[in-house]
Amino acid sequence: MARSALVTGGSRGIGLAIARELAAGGDDVAVTYRSGEPPEGLLGVHCDITDTAQVDAAFTRVEEEQGPVEVLVANAGITKDQLMLLMSEDDFTSVLDTNLTGTFRVVKRAVRGMLRRRRGGRIVLISSVVGLMGSGGQVNYAASKAGLVGFGRSLARELGSRGITVNIVAPGFIETDMTAALPEERAAEIKKNVPLGRFGSTGEIAAAVRFLTGENAGYITGAVIPVDGGLGMGH
Ligand SMILES: NC(=O)c1ccc[n+]([C@@H]2O[C@H](COP(=O)([O-])OP(=O)(O)OC[C@H]3O[C@@H](n4cnc5c(N)ncnc54)[C@H](OP(=O)(O)O)[C@@H]3O)[C@@H](O)[C@H]2O)c1
Image (cartoon, rainbow, N blue to C red; front, side, top):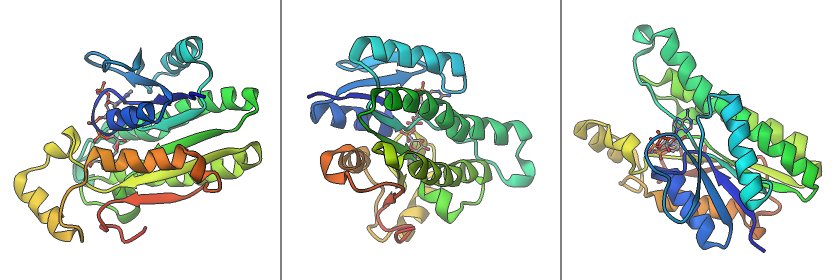
């Protein structure tokens, strides 16, 4: 039977690839989008995850259209890179508010429905290799992505007895708008440090997410799965 899945930030990049992969696996898939048009063939719900009322409204719409969310992928995220001494407090808190607190808002709303349904659920949080290794110029982003690991593992403990798994995917450098913004020399330098010698594709992240939300991953929770070409060596 088709499950009701929701991917935040699913109108482009990694989120869109995840949404398409879950749909290919037979799930009914909704995506949140903020700007532009929602992707064809998926249920698009307008939502800014920094606003609790918008998150609530988006879930209500998804519940009406395809039933309570059984599979949640918290993918929406932003960067605002700057060296720490030059970083404004707003650049720090706004990245935390989207990447970490935004995930809290979305996951909290999803879990309510999962508990009410009493049939378990799957939650995947999209972190980053940078959260585990650190990265100069990204104290805000790295803190938010490291925070997702503690958040996800704590939640995995809270929800395990209810049959809800919570896992974290930590992508390395993936070809999307986010990495297209990197200067060419910086991209070349990064590739030198990736054992597999290239950036990853969005499909490679989507495949890991599909596995974690699938039947074969029923005994995996609280895990951090790196999909990074070896950059983080398993961390
Ligand atoms: N690309 C990489 O190399 C890489 C590596 C590690 C981790 N990641 C993580 O993977 C996730 C997806 O990255 P990506 O490269 O696909 O990024 P992207 O192309 O920049 O897309 C980001 C997505 O997040 C959405 N979003 C941002 N702020 C939001 C908000 N306040 N409310 C709702 N949606 C919001 C965007 O919506 P709009 O289209 O409306 O702006 C967009 O759909 C992010 O969490 C990122 O940190 C990416």
